[in-house]
Amino acid sequence: MQNILITGATGNVGIEVIKSLSKMQGAYRVVAGLREAKSDNSLFRQLDTHTTYFNFADEYSIKKAFQGCDIIFLLRPPQLSDVEKYFAPLVKIAIAERVKHIVFLSVQGAETSSLIPHHKIEKLIVQSGINYTFLRPAYFMQNFTTTLKHDLVYKNRICLPAGEAKFNLIDVADVGLVAAHILASPEAHINKAYDLTNKEQLNFREMAYILSHVLERNTAYISPNLLSFYISKIQEGISSQYILVMIMLHFLPRFQKPPQLSDWVEKLTSKKPSSFVEFVEKHKDLLQPHL
Image (cartoon, rainbow, N blue to C red; front, side, top):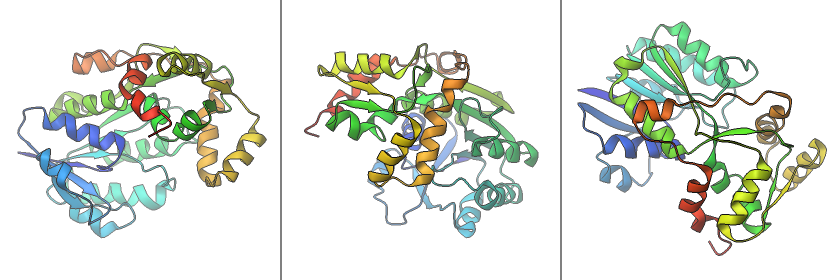
């Protein structure tokens, strides 16, 4: 029986991976890595998932979690950008503990974007000699129910320095389903990388139009200059480091060709990826002011 460790198990992606694995049949044991030892384990018990303490800043916890582990679903917490400090030791521990396969949640374009941490983490994993699979998802639709939610719900707007740049999109649930299929049968995906997108490219003005239609209230799109954006986010209490991540994610695509769409979600899961309209319809209750 294969032992599968899910890092970031309580996050949006981790939960979806575990949910998908719980619905599949296979000779594997799923372990959720939890940063908080006192986390509520009721959800994981319902999903027939074991738990273990796992903290990217605690090498002892990493070593203990990796013992007897065959496959790791690895993601990078947004606040951890120092690859040498956090991920180089992690990969060394994976080698020492004879981990057989790492499925890494990267990002679309990581193979050519040397400035982002995902690029460096991919290189570390390749150099380790451990079998790997890289998942490179497009722009998460769940950004609208998390980081962009406050502006959307209480100010009826999207405020990002993205201009008219086109973005590929993906529902985290589709990413979780792809990851589960790979984790359950990793031998078919050794040393491969998959771009994960749905079938549409939209700019934020077009996304605002869809949101207006589905939510039945006007959603404006504002594209501020970088200084205005930076100042407004500082005033909201957002850290300067995270603001720079938002700028990289939303401003730099204005000067790049839109990345190509991919059909890997359907190829790997036999399911068509969700459209943005379907996502907003599914989650529209989360985007109401009274919630």
